[in-house]
Each structure stands twice: as structure tokens, then as C-alpha cells.
Length: 101
Image (tube, one colour):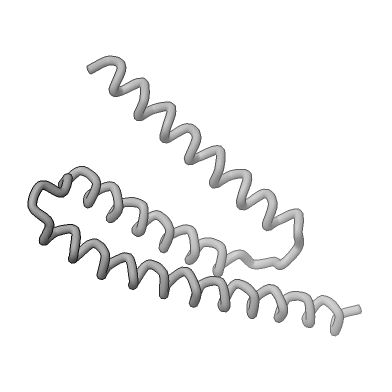
């Protein structure tokens, strides 16, 4: 049974690594888009800042997923649900802050 668990864990790590590679390539390509947007007169600085924040958060989430110690579906689901809950709370907090302004 140990070999089976090791195989599953290795498959999980390989999948995360491949996904990480794909997403990091995407983020690098988005940097080119960002540089072009900076050159466009009138392009919103707020949108550029939002893009930077989203990219930073994506990298942090990828690192967190990569550091997950187990490959069980339950642990991955719990990780994703926690991230969704945190994102929802951040959005709600932001909306409340805008309403109070």
C-alpha cells in the first residue's frame, strides 16, 4: 500500500508542477501585455495595479498548492474551499469599504 500512496503523491506533485509551469508561462506573457499597456496613453493605472495584485496572488496560491503536504482529494478540496472563502471575504470587505467612502 505504501508504494501506491507514493505513486499517487508523485502523480500529484507532477500534476502540480505541470500546472505551475503553464500558469507561470501565462503570467510571464501577461507581463508583456502589461508593458504594452503602460505605453498606451490613457490606460488606467488602477487596472495595471489590479493586474499586478492578481498576478502576485496567483503566484502565492501556486506556491501554497505546491507546498501542500498531501495529495488527497479531500485536502486539495479543503485548500481550494479555504482560498475561495478568503477571496469572498476580501471582496466583501472591499465592497463595504467602498460603500463607506
